[in-house]
Image (cartoon, rainbow, N blue to C red; front, side):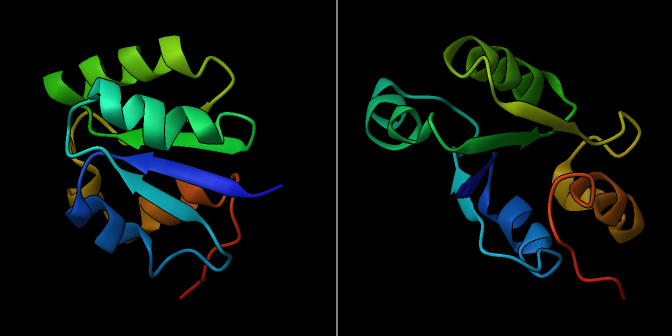
Length: 107
């Protein structure tokens, strides 16, 4: 089954891509969930293995709630509240969190 990872921004994708050691489609929402993005990008992939990894700040928490309603079978990954943003999360923590569900490069 193909894997899809939903993140908020391009910096999140840049931080995660080098860690992944398998093909994963990474979708950036740019922090919001428009109806167009939902209908044209996200919902057509709901039958795939979908993962959500967003920031632990107010916009990220709001986005997670929206995605949870639209994609109830998605698997949620979390950064720590102290890191707040995925792009600022240390590599060791990203390896641990992503390594639960993805093949990752172990440095």
